[in-house]
Amino acid sequence: MSKNLNIMLAGFGGQGILFAGKIVAYAGMIDGREISWLPSYGPEMRGGTANCSVCLSDAPIGSPLVTEPDALVAMNLPSYEKFIAEVVPGGVVVVDSTMVGTCTLRSDIEYYDVPATLLAEENGLKGLANVILVGKLLDATGFSTEETCKKAIDKSVSAKHADLAESNKRALEIGRLWTASEC
Image 1 (tube, rainbow, N blue to C red):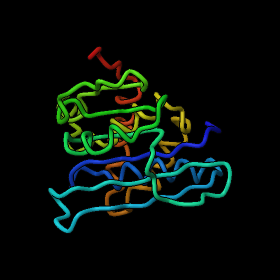
Image 2 (cartoon, helix red, strand yellow):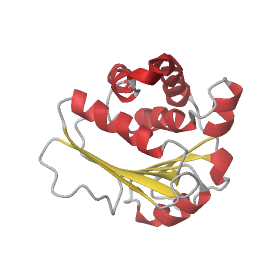
Image 3 (cartoon, rainbow, N blue to C red):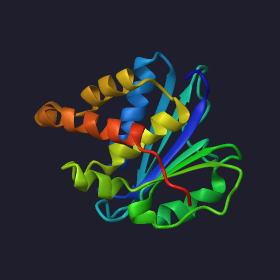
């Protein structure tokens, strides 16, 4: 948990990329770490590209822009293809295999394929594939604790949608416990 981590989360607009990054950033803030959360999305918004850089550090952060991620969460094939080469050796990659549908050729990273969109639909959590992937990221990197991430969900879910906090916590747990298959 005390390791500095530069994370890139990427997908289409409307997949909840910025929300997923917010959960990670809030968890870092609750843990008392230095954090940055930098959203980036195309002019199309929903359906266009979206990505989010999150830095978690024990020291001041020089730049919020993540160009060489220690961890990548990719929710679609274009995002995977755009960022996979940038992940540092020894880094962690978590993909929604429902949407990406490919395995990595890189042998110098930890690769987790999670059928997050399918798992969300099967568990009555449509639209929460993003949080399932955050759960797997939590499991793979230990960027925080499950308890802290659940508090981060409470902070991230707006008061208007407070009734969705529990389903987000269920999605986090599903991702955390998912055992990825071999590519």
